[in-house]
Picture (cartoon, rainbow over the protein chains, first blue to last red):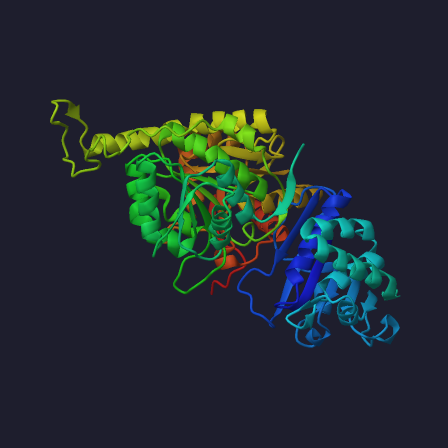
Length: 187
Length: 401
C-alpha cells in the first residue's frame, strides 16, 4: 500500500488534489484507493492535511496515516510550523512547491526530494482562484514524475473525470508542464 | 456495465436514497451528516429527484415531518448525527410505535458535553431502545447497498431502520463505490404500501390515548391495549431477522454483493481468538487479524452488522468454539461496559458458552484507532486470558489515572 500525505492551507485545493490522485490511481487499475481530508473543521489559510491511500487490493484501514511514503508540500511556509519531515517514512519522497531546484533545498535527511515552482506554473496557465495560484494540479505532475506511482496519462484521465471541459484542458496543460519542469534529488 | 465512482460515505447514502426514489426528505444540517441531505437538496432543486424537500427548524420537527409523510403514504428519508439524533429521540419512539418504515442515515458522532464533532457511536447506541432496526456499515459500498436494503426491510416489517456509519472515518473518506443500476433497484424494491392511509376521504384518528387493557372500538371490534401493541413491535423486530437475511441474499443475487445479513466473518474458520466490533472499527480489526496471523496468532473477526434486532443465534454460532473473544467498540454504557460486549455476553449465556470476553472501549470522540493497536490489545488480552482473567474492560489509548 502506498500512502501519500498532502500538506497545505485551507483554500489551496489540498483535498481536491488528494481526490484526483485517488481517482487517477483507480483509473490506472489500483483496486483500493481512499482519499480523506483531515477530519474536522476547516478554515481558509489554516494548515491542514489530506491523505491518499493507493493499493492493489481494496483498502481496509481508515486510520490516520502515521508515516507516508510520499509527502507533498503545497505551501513551503509550513516548514517549521508543521512537522512535515515527521510525517514521512525514512527513504520516502518529499515533494515541495518552491522556486528552488531540488539540489538547492537545504533540508537534509534520508529521503528523496523533488521540487517545482508550482506557483509560477499555475500563474502561467492561469490556474488562479480569487487571485491566488492553484498549485495542486502542478504538484500532481511533480508526484507523477518523481514517484512514477500514477502515470501522467492517468492523471490526465483523472482530471477529465473530475473537471469540466475548459478547466480540464488548462489543468492538463499545467500538469504536463509541471511534469517536464520537475527537478529531482535522489536520497 | 458497472458504474463505479470514488465517493464519500455521505454521497453513498444520498445515492442510496435517490435510487429508492424517496418522495419526502426533511433534514436539519449537523456535522458530519450535512452533505447527505445537501446533496439530495441539490438533486431536488435541479429536478433530478422528484421529491418534496421540507426545511424545518429542528431535528425534532424533521422526524415529525417524516412521520406525517410516511403516514400519508410517502417513502421518506432523513439523515442526522449526534445531538440532532438525540433531539429526535421522542419522535424516534413515535415513528417506531406507529410502525412507519422511515429510513434514517445516522452518521455516527460523539455526544457532548464537552462538544465534539468527531466520531464514535454513542449517539445511535443511546437510541438502542426506541424500536428502530439498527444496521452498522463497514465501508461506503455497504452504505449505498444498505440504504436500498433498508427500505425493503422497513416496508416489509413496518419498522423504521437506522443505517449507521462512522462520521468522518467513512462519511468524509472517498473510496470506490459501485452505483447500482436504477432499474434493477426498482425491480428489487417494490412500491411502498402503507399499513394505514390517512387521507381526507377516509378520516381516522391515529394513535389516540390508549388504555392498559383491550377494549372494543366504535364498531365493536376488540382492540389491543398498549402492552399488546408493544409486544407486536417487539415481535416485529425479532421477526425482522429473517427478512434482513433474505433481503441481503436477494440483493447479493441481483447485484453480486453480499454484506452478510445479520453479521459477517473474516478468517474465523481456524481462529483461536475472535475480534468483534461494529462499523469501521471492525474493518480495521480485519487488518489487525492479518497482523496477528503474521505473528503466529490465528485471529479472525466477527462484524456485527445488525445490532437491533440483536443476532442472538448468529453470535452463538460464530463464537461457539472459540477460546477467546475481544470486543472493540466506540461507545460506553456508563456504569457498566460497552453495549455490544454486554449483549454478546448475554447471548452466549443462554447457550452455556463460558468463553472469556474482554472489552475495549476505543476511539471515543474521534480518537484514532490503528490496526496495530487493536492487534497489540488482542495480544495483551490473550496473555491475561491465559493467566485466568475471564473478563476485563480497557480504555484503549486513554489516560486512566
